[in-house]
Image (tube, rainbow, N blue to C red; front, side):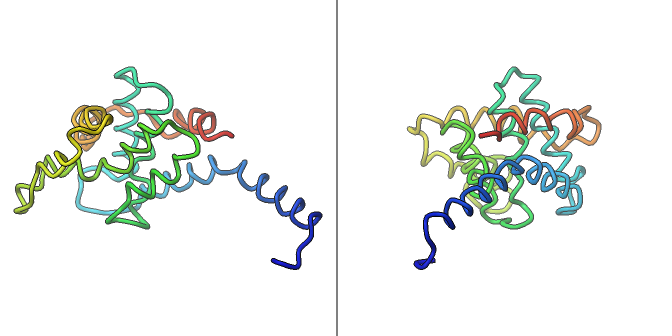
Length: 171
């Protein structure tokens, strides 16, 4: 790359910018692929994501938070032990810091609902008790995320959220 000149870099910059315009569509494909991820739950990861986003939307969450709710588990297939960090990396250029923090930490906050059954500390989230987004992450998990495993819930389809994803992930 040290031998590339300004004209070459301007060309490459144009290619990268054009590629970036398709980010939302690639994200929607990745979401659709969650239909075939992880078994054992009563709903697919896609359905869980749709339920989480639908709950957030019906609760009056703003557009950035609804998209965060939709994408919070997008990293499950590639990064099962730190999927929140992957989701946060996807979201970071497009949403406010609160949403990025929630995406990053929701997995730890979710442990409140099951860790004690596995001999772990369900209150591990309390290490962030004084963080400005602690309460928002508790709300995200309590009211939307942990409640989004219901096979009878009438969630919106992915097509409902596609325009919102395109709007928020447009730059």
